[in-house]
Length: 116
Image (cartoon, one colour):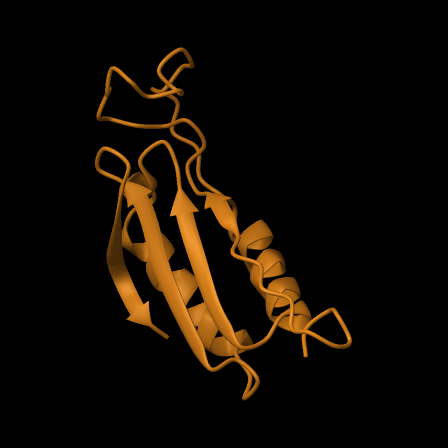
């Protein structure tokens, strides 16, 4: 069981990978009033800490939603590190791990890792 001692608790985190940074400039985007030109990325230290704590608190199926700006501006190496850390912290209590990003006009797409 997860944090609850009874019914398993299901939490799907939405992680802002690159802040407002985006190269699409969609007219309807709620970030469009912000400076979308400043490249920022979730630090390796914070990513590692978040995944370690998440896997220590929750079990069962895990779904991670990577959100931005445009999350893929974090580059492939960032998401390869995500998968490496997920494999590192995954235990027998975690039956399935999926990664999605919300990009390309808000349409969710399976990217990079699929199942870990």
